[in-house]
Image 1: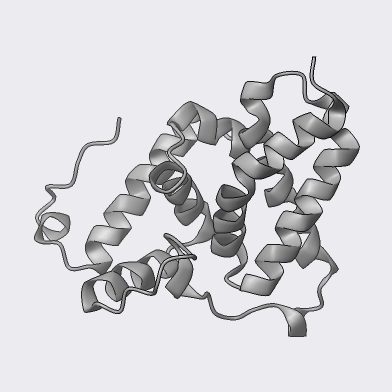
Image 2: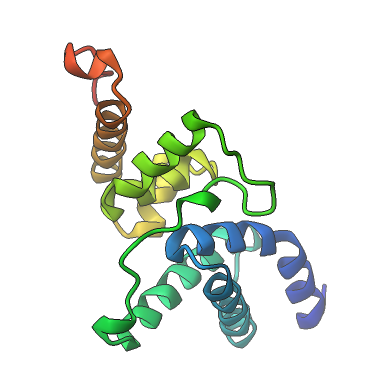
Length: 174
């Protein structure tokens, strides 16, 4: 049996990059993303004994981070809220920025999606979660997640000028 500090250390080493990428996507600010990750791990340390299934650690941490992000913005006054989204760090914040027009267009289109559509799409595409896992993380039904994913893709096609979006040739909703 591993000690509490060993379990925690393994968890930090395994999930820091994923948590940072998700936090950066949520807030669009590198400094705030680092603070969110730090606070998430602080909360994780305090509640580590509540984690009974080690396989669920990543989902547990992402949910904690998402809630901490919400708490951060609950405490802010409207003047402090960000009005724009930093689209430059959506995929991999550690990689040099891709300055191609196509990549910029995709990032801008993603940033323009409402959070209710953008969040499940990025959880699926960047983090690799399936619909059931996203549903648990976002506290939605799997059907709601599939609907949001379908609409997010449809809106991206429209924003990027995909001819299939105008011709009604978009994929059918599962």
